[in-house]
Figure 1 (tube, one colour):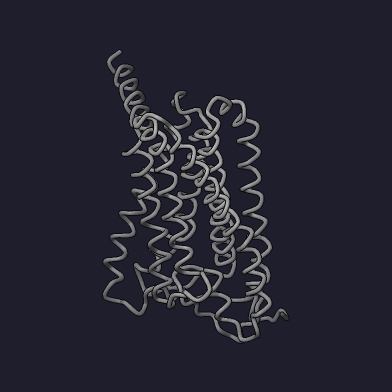
Figure 2 (tube, helix red, strand yellow):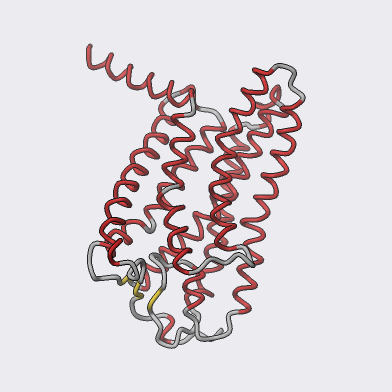
Length: 313
């Protein structure tokens, strides 16, 4: 892959939803509302998890990082999309595109690994509850999260140069609403077999390996839960893991549908599926982890009541 001048200079044009001009105003309003909900909701989870001592546990430590990832992931692309939807200017600078691609790949990879870590946390909680606090100690939790962030960002750094330095022969229109890797590769006017093979190898390590680990972990969890004698105990164990498993299904279901070989979606489908993940999954995560979670609702009540008591004094 030879670097050419056209691969490193000038702006990109994000075509986005230009093929559906009648939808752009509707999409602007819907996306803006969903984005504001994502900001408020994820910020609330982060603050509650940090401020309430009852939530200073490994599960909520990981949930705080997941909320931060959702917040960062949407912020990396949605403000640019809202700007593009609001007018005729669809351009993004080369540096802006590089930053967007870095965040999209990096944060997506980190979330894959973080979901696997959260599966391990639930595995220990259900299968080895007596030693849970000893095994999931603060040092291990911090180490696992650091590895997830390091691997995700390293994967992104490895893919950005080879993607952006592909010769494009003057092509600057990205058929997507963000600088997404596959959309950028499709712009190339050279053979991309090598980079596509590299993407596949990295995807196995960052995407499929964590998924396999999650499935194996939940296999052991189901086996352990079925051995619990009391119905209430089984119900409690399933409730403990149900939220995380639902988030995993939402996250990986979208990725598998879009990117698995033999099931490649059309470009318009890819745009809407990516938008679905960016704007629907984060609010659903909030509903799953808050409205269905007694501990978070209890923490919110305690914080609100304490604030009212301070105001009365």
